[in-house]
Image (cartoon, rainbow, N blue to C red; front, side, top):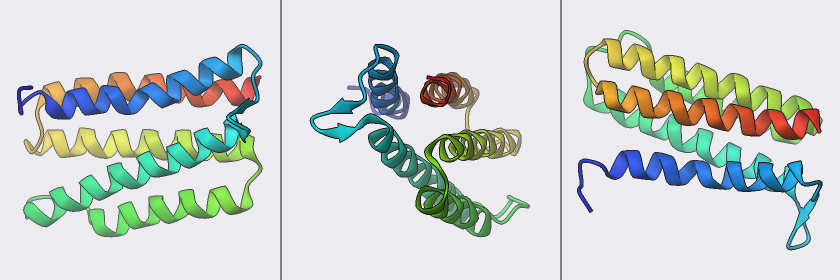
Length: 142
């Protein structure tokens, strides 16, 4: 496996649970191995948001040219997601997750415009974020 392509492969693989569990919701399944599918999607989306925020921390630590404080912003987004899972009804939580994922994508666009990441990365993130947003809308409307 080419180390250069590994981030893009991992981004794609990370979207598979969203697609799989959203498909299960489309075919009217509500549980998977006795766990509520919405619960699985909510925990997984919280994990992915935490991971993306952590990657922003790493970029902020290694780059002095960024004008926005990714320490503060990524903490705020992660904690918002955490409190969302605790206090929001599931449909509102999914909407919050969608909002946070879009904000994280906008941050990635900003990072790209600062010549820190590559265009290929932005294309991958845009494609997968769009797919994940669609997957998170499915349980809201079903």
